[in-house]
Image 1 (cartoon, rainbow, N blue to C red):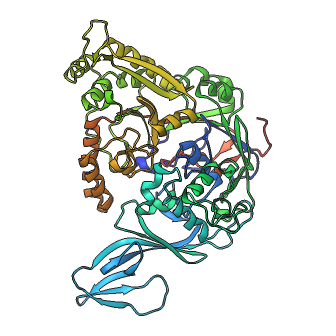
Image 2 (cartoon, rainbow, N blue to C red; image 1 turned 60 degrees about the vertical axis):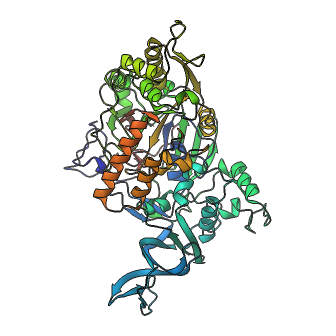
Image 3 (cartoon, helix red, strand yellow; image 1 turned 180 degrees about the vertical axis):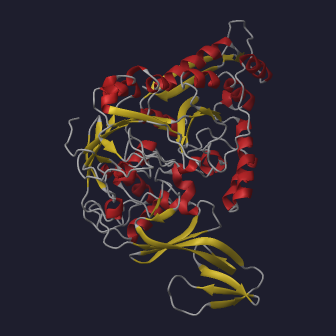
Length: 607
């Protein structure tokens, strides 16, 4: 198969499989039924995406659950999902008004006429506009209130009706400091007021304009109140007097985190040590977006064994092929070609190694910079990635609208690194071949997910390079659960991770000082006033040109501080079964939509 290609890198939507010519033929007609087996590198601790911020959880959540809005993977436009419709409105805050309570705040479509504000109330109210004299002390906040009308008749997968109570409860969870959702809390903190006037209407008001406001409603993990809310009389464990701490612990420990009850087209059927199985749910509310296959199996196989499983016919889809496997070796055989085809496309994922800036030995940016100058990224790209990977200098998507490609990455320069370490006070005082300071050698522990061939190979090369300048690197593989717990607790020196983001991501979660504590997505603990200022300006800026300038300034500032060893953007190199049709390559994670796939034959297959 040919690699995905497009005139615009943010519009990738190419159909892959041999022999299909989009210019002269249509796709085969979709046939419902059958099963697909999709590889995942590891299982999360839970399917509750509110408290489990992993890419695997999100990928499963896309088929098992639903949000108020969904983002179209081709156009990136937001469209109603659980919402039937939505409207964006303005707020006029009168003198002495309070957005948090709604007192002396007018909401509607607001214009100006003859020195007065003209407030047209929300949708289809049929009333006359309100005219308000302009006086000092008033504030007009454009596009800061969002009204939603929910679909009626939507059912949770246990046959309980979905309504505004579920959304309001989920929003309250982000207000509860005992709900362990700090990696996502930043987005929902910006909503100053949320309310409902009926079971099927919702209103959200932001305290100020926010450039990614609609993303908030796509990202909101909605929990079933009748299962998770201790104040809900429908909850078998109802306890109206439960404290915030008790409610947080109830969510954290609830068996539904693994026995997930969602709103999506597929319903969880089984979770074993090696497989998560979901079956198509006939009660799903939106036939136009329901799935074709009867069953999805997400099979957990470590990367080092996944190609073997692929060649034995145990997987339909695998998108973590190494360069060696993709360009030859085990995928260059008649046996492989009889079962599979392969291709690749770039998406908004980057690798990075995060420094723990709370460690005394890593607080000095000169130390972090020097250590970064000993990682041979160009060598890794040429050898391991066969020239396909691209170095990155920031967390935004390299082909996205706000990434600054003009920033020069750190060079591979061990001798320059040795000099920079000495400038920071690290040099070999006792002539034992190791740099030291205050009586202690410089030793770094490098955590990575066990079974990751990429981390093992790159870690070993990095270890050898550091040894040449007198720095010890200890490699430590951990399973995913242990790795994420160490990350939350900030119990690491250096950890190999990756971001999979939208085309534009709010930088607050990664870099703002307010999230420098434990449990957040600011893994490094970065705290810098200039970074905070730039983030604040970005969030308020709605003009794309000025936004890009601010993002560039932020990217340069963060890169100079080196909280990460920023890594590479690697294409998804995949193998897909010839039985499966309608694989499309999208920028939005995970780069495909299983519910769009269908089989050429509907017969089931063994695991």
